[in-house]
Image (cartoon, rainbow, N blue to C red; front, side):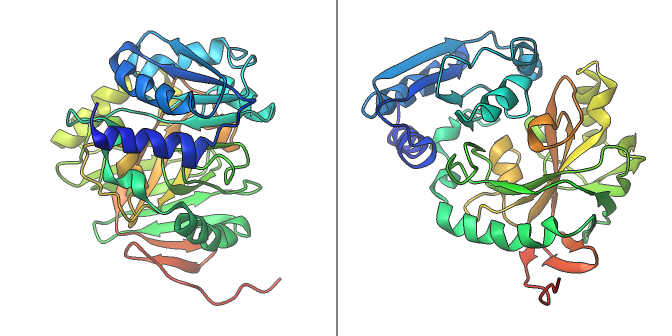
Length: 329
């Protein structure tokens, strides 16, 4: 247990989930992350009387299947920290917990460099600053129906979000109205049959690391229709085939990273998608994000330095937030 891990655990318990004495907290983890679970429990027991642990089988990207088929598993608790390798925030159990007004924090611990995610510097991001940044972006996303994204690498993508409301994560469950994720971002579920265009993947492939060379991904009628045959593309194709679910190819989420402490280096899934100056498209399940798509999993594809337009108003230029002209209604 390092000082950095202790710092990360303290941030999670004291600043993010903010459990109270009367809470019944559940920490979900796997045997690979027992050390992180122990340090989280150590700080939690200073603030709450009831702390339980659930160690689930590490089934990798399929861990969410258990929480889809056992959606009542969180019912006895008032607060849940999902500290597994893969995110549980889009599962049916998480959706049920959120609907029942429980505190839910998704804490995916997957890394590719041997360090604990709790040790990363991005954990120190000022949550108040991220909240202010998010509100600026959400204002324009909320009152738009179309998103257009281009990048210097060649991305030219159109996404649609009619009747879909944006939200944001910054770790703090209170800011997320009861649930949040360690990923510091603005997100919105997108219409599952309408995404069109090309994404040139030059950031991260989610859980499997960095895009080593720019790789074209074609979207047609909402789903990935073609992946360029580069080494990066072959890695991505093999990974997606491992889900054994055609729904994993459907675009379900659009996100914008807000964490200025984060770098998109392929070392940590949550750090990559959180990095300020990036956008991502989440594929697969999006139920808990306000969408209609179920699947055996969910992960994000991250691209760098976007120009982002909401109904033709530019809100980001080469990865930097800009303030458009006032919207008049």
